[in-house]
Length: 557
Image 1: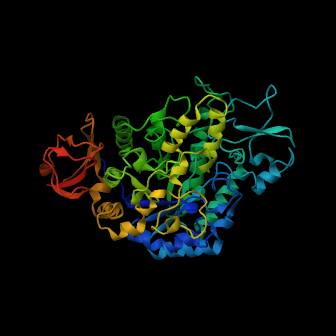
Image 2 (image 1 turned 60 degrees about the vertical axis):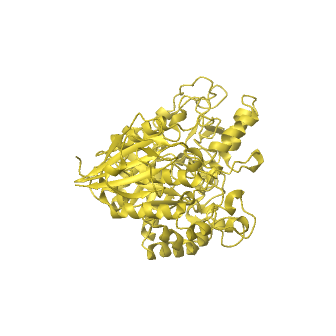
Image 3 (image 1 turned 90 degrees about the vertical axis):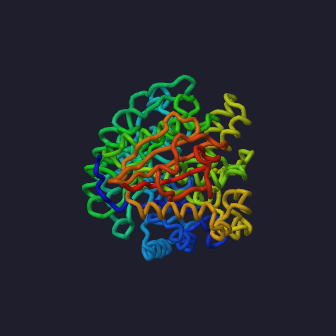
């Protein structure tokens, strides 16, 4: 058995806030920093240790804050730097920590660096970004960008193309330029000196571009895959080691990389030697199950137990003793987990939300709770393209629907299942107008089910999803086996039950989760597995699990 080295960030539970949709303090319909500060006691009651805020920097909001125009200023809609300092002080006063979203693969095209860069080919900031001459009357290569379309935008003023792996208003920084790295590392140090406690690093696995060759074109695809030339490159690892030496090693931080890739990539980024990051987000259990689909994630493939279990168990086993894992099913880029992986019908929403929470919080790795997950918030299921706000949605619509390649109703059905806006609807605080999120007009529609699904109601109900999450988090804080125990898969061929065991010293923790809306036979006998720590049912049937039933049992030698 591998003995895991202890660290505070392994024992922590992280809560992600999407500031625009969390809480509005001034009635303009947009969440803000003062809204977060006003609800810190709620997060303390939940029991989380770390708050991760999606970007709050100055931004024109082409991609909801992931297009930064000034790394050392606060977005006007969110407040002021004084508001930020007050929020940070409030977080620390309650014994919690703050993680900032570091978006350093690209900036906004309104960042002063890019404004200067595009003025002329000999501008001192020209090499802060990736500029190339065209080829054969078109783009420098055949790469597509992540939101559909070409990864290159022609700039008439200087007669060259600039690279953007995301929106054309998000030009990629040229990390090969040491002056860019100096600026980024200096900015990170500035925030660390302010007192923040870590960084979640957006698409950090893409910073090391090594070549600009044409990428392979998949059947039915319009553009080539440039990923092999800019994802998980040796150059990226070199930059991260430099970042650790120049910034990260000087502070006691939690560092989380949005890197994707497979388990071998995660082991390199978050190796036990600690040369790069503490942990990374993998996407195989969310995006990877659609591998081979020419439209990427746009489909109604679903999330079958066998596929999800295979991926999640593989990540648990491969990283064990080699790297630290992140455990999650939802965030600002994913739909609501109870709608995608569970059952959000009125009959089963609470049971399946608790089951999914149990499955995740008992695993090896740091759990991430996305705002509203602890309430069992669901997808909104809008039926009109006009109700969406996400740049990804509109670009995919142009590429697939307006080109006549996909039927509009099919696309809307897929959006209702997996579009990112499903997770970005306002936090449901109460049954008051607009779910108590704002006294104004919310920037995006509120989910109509807020009348029954809201924090005020769940705080008052001891059997709610909220209080179940409180108990899950408290158990993690109380039992080392949940944090540091080995992971052992169980019942890997069972069509209905996801089961596994955690072992540490003389303790065995067994987790049983029925993934379905039917009573399922279970080959493991609960009575023989020890003391029940938590379950989403008050009683049990020997040899079976009720629909979406979850049980956690602890045996001590």
